[in-house]
Amino acid sequence: MGVVRFSVEAPDAGVRLDACVARALGCSRAEARRVLASGGVRVDGRVRGASHKGEILQAGSEVEIPPWVPPEGRVPEAEPELPLEFVASGPGWLAVDKPPGMPVHPLHEGERGTALGAVVARHPEVVGVGEGGLRSGVVHRLDVDTSGVLLFATDAAAWERIRIAFREHRMEKVYRAIVLGRLDGADQIDLPLEVARSRPARVRVAEGGRLVSIAWRTVETLDGATLVEARPMTGFLHQIRVAFAHLGHPLVGDRRYGGGGEDDVSGADRHMLHACRIAGAGTEAEAPEPPDWSAVLARLRGLSPHVR
Image (cartoon, rainbow, N blue to C red):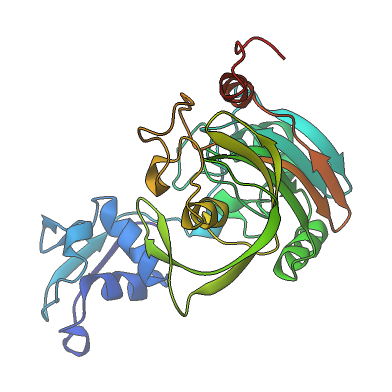
């Protein structure tokens, strides 16, 4: 879509700028705000950005909106130079070992360094699958600093099958987490969660929130910490991190939810959470622990980080 220019007519006078942009482009209010944030929208010749989203338009005002591509039409940039290990594949799907610090998919055109960018370079058939656009082939997500196994679909039938399995809680998801303090035994955590803030994201326990369920068991007692296995039966942003913090055992290195303080002597540069296995809907894949994880474990065992 090219540049859109129009005059605000009387029936639209008194409408918010973001609502007017959304109507002109035929997009959501959230997408209209992203267009405003790009800095290309003008009202009567003046640039209007994200902070002007609530500006009330007057009849006769001249509005100019820069060229815009709908989300489904955006193509993730292929990155053949970006290393990424593929750990399993099957009809219509593949699994990668996402390193910590790598986003799953780009949030805007031109963003580089994502797992999807590396996948597109090797499997271009993923483009347009599922939600399409900058989320092509994505069936689930991991936090940027969470490492481990991540699935992508390469055809529509597989994407739908896997997504349904996630919605119906039929996917087996196994994580390893290193938490502060001593935590013995095995149990299930059931908590209502809500997103308290979007950017940067923060989740909290809140009455009336979405109920999440996570089964856990102790794997190994460490020096001032515990290695646990967590099996979430639900899907929710930061659910494992928030659940263990709620128990009084935040993840090692997780400064957002209480780790990384004076009691955290691990030296971890990120929250210690690793997706080690996923299976269901015809998929099965595992990812080995990454080097930084092994080094933190070694320190907490009182060993040299080079000793296995």
